[in-house]
Length: 487
Ligand code: BES
Ligand code: MN
Ligand code: ZN
Image (cartoon, rainbow, N blue to C red):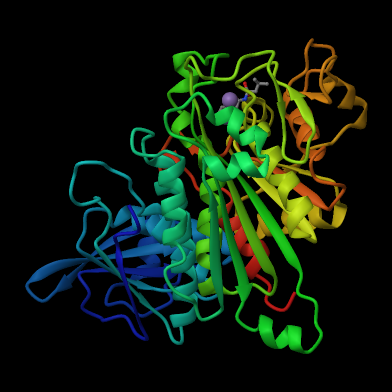
């Protein structure tokens, strides 16, 4: 569900708030005056001022008892304030209203953390359990609160899309949700869309998307969302060339594995196999409000990888967009087939300056990097560095993985240009060979691939994350695209 907590911003927190959160630092001094001796109290509780730490103090409020939540702000960095915001929101769970005295510094990060921790996804129950209303108090805080809210809202959308069960979510549904993101022009730009249905995919030559989708009663879609900054016409008139970035997301609305069927233990999480596509939809949906200096086109390759009599078979040979043939040795390596079409289309038709794809591509990456780091593969060091930096700044960290040329022969096929997986086991490195497969379709353009199979889903409600889809990639890509204006 979209963020249900209502948000207001005021200059000064009301002194009589029933639930008031107030920051304190390592000096154990609260940042606003309170009618209780706070420092001795914090000392008594052996508080350290760390981010995430909360000391709850009952205070007199007329005839009733109110509460002050003293929250630590650590080093005041964006990461610390995100964590502090999440802790405060979690402590206010179930309450009607919370007033928060914003910390100094990265106030947008604090708001983002609070709203993401308050996210919930439930079907068939009213009320989310999250605090119903938050009032953020700080001088001139409107813009930062708005940015934090916009970013958290985009993450919540990505989580909602990925958390939606596949009984409701198919490629057509995903395309409808994507189109909803275009409702109106934002202050910073405008977004437009195009959707290929099955017939259009066939006449367009999108053989990978069609092959993966052919086993399902719900036909596949390719979804394109395009953002252009508001000042693009003037910049063009001045003779300026506006850079064009393409984002490609994996949109497998359910991954049974196809005829190379997954065991139930692995299959039961596969409604989130469109998490990369959800991130691309959410990012494109947020750009018109947040503004980016470049043009951005999002492509979501959507299909359901079903098990049926019309499904593709191991051993089939398909023709990807652009004419390359691929021997499908394992129908469960379907993500790369749909992604290859979208990348090849972008290369051939959209003339991008660079391409970034995001996909829950390989289970192996979760083994390599765990649930805390996304994988970054890149053909270009500058692009890798800028994404890595955005990862650090946004709190969605990446770890660069190698594209080892020695492993390219792993994807040789006797009957086609490429195989979709290694036929034997001489090379291993399933995440790397998957990335190398995608690279074949990038036309040598600067390209980065984000494998989010490990970080796309959380097993616990903790910090900024909630159990289920994480929306990993939204904060990273919005930071990368909008975080440093004028870049
Ligand atoms: N969607 C899966 C990858 C995945 C696994 C995502 C676990 C999230 C959690 C992907 O389509 C897949 O099935 N990959 C195979 C590749 C193999 C057949 C080469 C895998 O990882 O097992
Ligand atoms: Mn699969
Ligand atoms: Zn998959």
